[in-house]
Image (cartoon, rainbow, N blue to C red; front, side, top):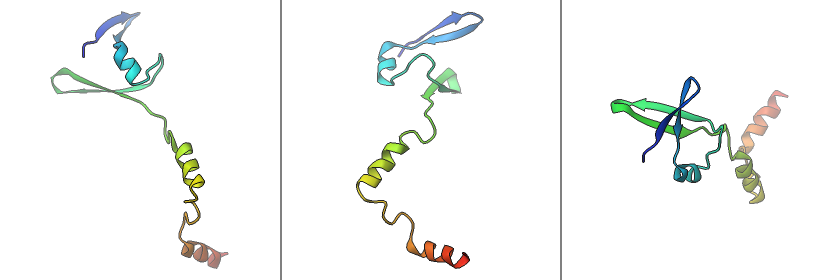
Length: 83
């Protein structure tokens, strides 16, 4: 896929094709990681927030009742022995 490098003030920018913007839900200000590799190849990865989606995953876990034995029972008895 082709992209054009453009001048923005004293910097350069990369014009991202509309199809890529839609596919990856990019917006102005989206943080990315850039990796330059051999032969001038460039890899862009969208930066995700730490623990993104964990709240929904844990809510589903609790809703399904799978949180009853989150930690093994023997841990509770070991902790009680110290108290």
